Amino acid sequence: MFFRFIIFYTVLPILIAFIFNEYFIYYVAIFQCGWPDNNGSGEKLRALVLSDPHLLGDIEGHWFDKLRREWQMYRSFQTSISLLQPDVVFILGDLTDEGKWATGKQWDRYVINAKRLFATPPGVQLYVVVGNHDIGFHHDVTNTKLTRFLKDFSTKNVETIELKGHTFVTVNSMGLEGDGCFMCQATERQLQDAMDYINCKNSMKPKYCNSNKKHPDPILLTHIPLFRTSDIECIGSDAGQDGQHRRFNYKDTLKESTSERLLNLVHPRLILSGHTHNTCHRSHKDGTPEVTIASYSWRNRNDPSFYLFTITNDDITSFKCHLPTESTVFTIYGVAVIAALFIFKMACNRNMRCYSKIWKRL
Image (cartoon, rainbow, N blue to C red):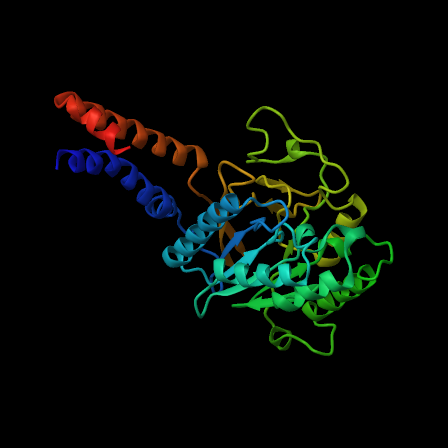
């Protein structure tokens, strides 16, 4: 009886820590999030935006790491949907970590898993932007990899999305190289068609073309950010917390000429991007704001996050939501283990025979 008493009260702190860390901690973190105020005109749209989940695959992902990261993202996402109830969710690319390498069967498992983890209830629409880990960088993309991603995640190379009077344009970043590749010409043509549609120059015109109301400029969503030399250009960046600012190479952002072409063609009111795994707020030369959203995966960051946007016709407000930090989780487990050992020592000190009893049972 005494032995069972010791075991129960020794295991109890660890059990409490496990339940808190693997379930309730997500509610504690996300309870601190809230939709930003927006007093602009027109109907409000509430958008939850995340980037770079990097769901692990069969090649580089250890089974335990894969299990843990998927559980963390599943609990974070489902808790966010339940508490915040957004109108729409956008994932800004790199949904998968090994989609660029996956065989047919591996890809099918990826799709089933991703749809399970990021399932949304009726009335909450989910849109996924293509990322380089999903199909490969520009020179690695094949028609098969591109086609299966677009088909299985019900998205397009370039897509125009209209929600509550607000227009979004998603674009495949890897198709913006401008070198005449098999998808590059199609991407540029589709982007021009999308802008002709938005600007009422297309035979298929949006409903607002028949009214006198001025339609707001679109919001551009792309996986790879527009050109910048490093994160030192960012305001509110979490990239330089250690005092070091990463300098970008040609794969980290779009080319300067491509970025200028996008800005001149789309005239976006806001640009949302991912890819760097760090947060960045910046304004381009013409004043267009861009928000680069940090990775949603604990494998890439100690402190993953996502964004909430409240969008009206003449204003966009944002709030950065922080998920539980990995270091906090480890600290709680560490404190629980120390408490368990302390309880065990105090109990056994009152009955010295418990050490020999436990040793015999072992």
